[in-house]
Length: 407
Image (tube, rainbow, N blue to C red):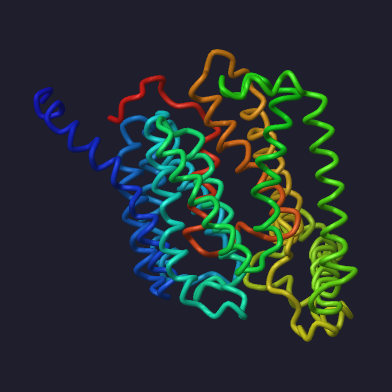
């Protein structure tokens, strides 16, 4: 038996290294409007990853069973209206599938995720530049969110590279993603990734120096100057954004009307459990657009101005979405998860050089990116690929085995 395991190990190691090639393939299929083929691709990836986790985490068997029971809903989107009880389950599956990986395995995964920018760039080059870039499935916002995730993956792949040419290659992919994001037109996708990286650097320099890679330690000499430059940059960004988006926009009143509608919708969704009795306050109104019916143009004049008589299909805010659909219990669960994630970020990583580098280049920027998206969108809804990438990214906050080998 031992001989069989020893002979199988190299094959498993090779399969582990190439399994994440499913992500560039899936993204390419999404660009071609082959959503079922894309979802089947990541479904096979997910099954393989969960099977590998069974020996390390026996509880992965439970998630495999849940995946088998819900696979049809994931792939065929039978219950997405647009939110669904399966949304957090898909995120959890991505998390469990990637938990406990070595640093070498994370470097390999991030490289494949970064390479998913390539099919997006090829597809975007053939689209009409005068029209905002949107995926055939998921639209503008889901593509913007995906681009931000992939851009951060390319940034991390560059930062964790072991050679200058690899670092240069993945840094180029970061730059390649910028014109795609501009073509997409999502404001949060344009601002949130670089802002998340900048906040991570400032936080590491000012408070958490153990995150800093050795080659970045020189920044500690200029702590005060870096903080001052960051604050000045934020003020400049606010000024530019206010002028270009609100005071002198390309489409007069467009951003003001859009943002007012989103804010009104978020507040309206938050109010609904408070108005529907104690049971709804505790458990929420549920899924399948039950909340949307109360937040249409009759309740919100901004929706009438925007030409959306039925209102928006989601709250455009993570917390409003959760409290409206899942009530106070859902909000308490979300708060518990956020506390756990914060604990992982701020735990002691002294002496954990490789893990602290992963936190610096990927884990913390990704968590900040999700937090910024959560304030302006319900990013956790639909598009299975995005949901799996959320879970995958959150798993990076947990340290894996010290060994650099890929079992």
